[in-house]
Image (cartoon, rainbow, N blue to C red; front, side, top):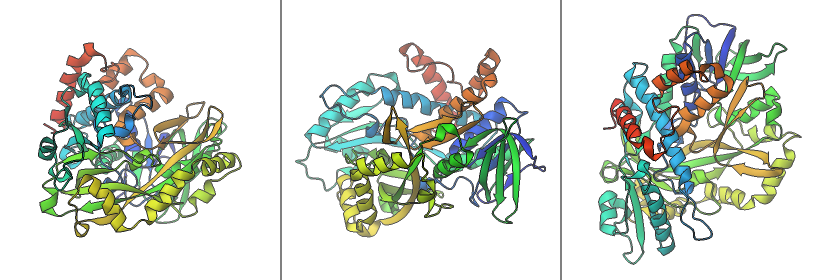
Length: 506
């Protein structure tokens, strides 16, 4: 279901919920809400002709099930030489598990089928070089492997063992250079676009629901009765209609900033957007692809955003395995890859966020310089970065492809303007009638955890009583209990094993 508009026979003028954007957040929110309360009427509007083809599109993200296993940026090296802090990856692992739990339930209950269309097992590896980084990775491993989530993680400094895990990493490498790696076999490769389209296909068939492509939200206005008037333009016919909704979720990726400004949401005052483009190096030669079955993450440059941490990944896209290396960031003024405009950044500048944006320009010059240099570097320069991971890489085996756009939220925090936030967060209005997704990694991987928080805040009657918790646990078996605690390890392992069987990961 990539281009067709899915809908019910009727298109109600009024809805309980309107969701803007068809990415992985929107799809999971819509599906969860409808399962929790089948009486809800839900409409989804997507500006592009295809569903889930911006940030959720398989070619526009790393496809890593961000469980904290291999992403070194989540465990930065302490400046004082103390042991590496691993609490963040423990938290992310538990949050990612909720995504697996819900998708496993969706498959087992018949909501969606074909789990291998969107999720497949791939080992996750962290790889470093140099004495300093080897010591860092050893400390990271010590902290992580002490927790039951990561008990099966392996660590080695032996080039032969690393080569057995991922031969491209060691062939042709200087044997005098110290290297180290950690590995876990429980990692995944995910096509977030495919799982989104499957969930939206189910949602569009439910009573009172519709999913509409080529439908651009052009205005949002709060009504005296508390509802939102959402003006939608059909991009095929040019027709404009207005729908009313009690609750609006803005899951429009980079387009969320401009939509929040149209809504005149007080909570969005001072909020700006900083777009970052991306590119991948891609290899689809079967003889090379077959020799690398892993997602391998390294260290990012100090001035680089966390989304630009280099990694060489096994991907399953368009029905075949391929290798991606990158991402290489780039400067852009567009907020969306497919439906955005080169004027997006300029149009987003308002009196209330001008000071924030000016301070970003003044205090983040290394980042801006990095983006410009990344976007203009030659293929030879990109291949030199590649050879840090894959020393024997040949230019002719790789091609450069577009990797989509991310818009980082820029906001005033603790009275300090001009701070770029590279995490994922949800902005919610004071009256809980609107929520919007902002940020990037680990976003898609922990989407179910994020949208359950949206539901908890704006639909508390669905979650805050015993019946609601029971319904939620039917959909997400790990919901409501802290499985980070040692005493819950056995139960976690049981539920995790069930979900992985449902998703055909084992």
